[in-house]
Length: 370
Ligand SMILES: *Cc1c(COP(=O)(O)O)cnc(C)c1O
Image 1 (cartoon, rainbow, N blue to C red):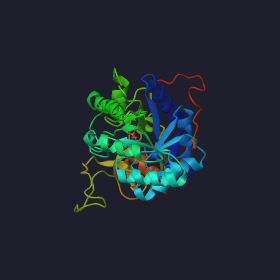
Image 2 (image 1 turned 30 degrees about the vertical axis):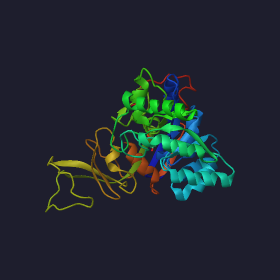
Image 3 (image 1 turned 90 degrees about the vertical axis):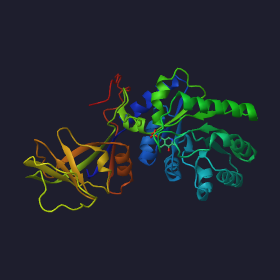
Image 4 (image 1 turned 60 degrees about the vertical axis):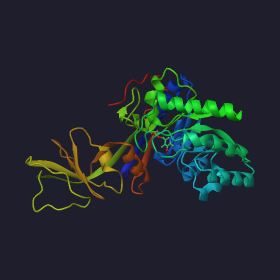
């Protein structure tokens, strides 16, 4: 198999998705599976659907088109506000989109009319994280305009926290979202079908809240794929954190001094970390670099330590072992490293079912795998 490659375990993604779908169903919350970190990879999307995820969301229309072409037949939501220049494609391939600008919704309406379709519109509300969203005070007038547009179905409201500023979802901001839903219904006499509370950062709140109020949807990416809560980057109980492994090949391994010598200026990517003199160490170079992934988001194998990375080289202190030339090492990835590995043309993918889905084999799966 070629390296570098991303090994993807579908059985672990399936387990994570099913676990979250089941846990949230008990609280009346449905899941939109967010596929953007895997570029809408059809195998992963299909796995999410087979695990009980009935709606998929992606930030890019290209990814939604790829999933449709692969024959995945569920409802698709474009979770980034559409570019007005892409309105025609959005209407043709996404069932629903998240919106914050009336000019865009008008364009979606025109395109939907021309195509003889109805397009679903979710309005995103700004609740403090200062990324996308209509300010709550401006929401009623906005909804009034949306309701007048032909071929547009007003689906509901949502919010996105913890992405830009790290504002945590909590009872207070979720209550604001619920009461906005109530008051819009009272004002306009419409039903707000979907109240979309947020992303994986909402799980802490959603799984412990005594009352989820009107929130009936979460959009989950990182928690399903990497088994982590983005607010604290902690492993979520009972989920796999190792559905993805990035594998790279050793191209040099030598005993070298631990401290560089000579006059020190900047390295290729700014100043290098200061290295203390620990005598000779076993240093390996892997054919993996910033063109393949985010090296700061990699976790080295046990007993090894990442010393630095440039465009094409990852330098490791391999501890007491000296891996052979041509041997391979595997790394766990965070969200940023996963995203970069998925978008790099140099990284291939090896998708496997693992040992079969744990629940198909009648196994109870406990905590995250080691
Ligand atoms: C990326 C994204 C999500 C999913 O976020 P995760 O933290 O990966 O769960 C949800 N909603 C919006 C609007 C997003 O952009």
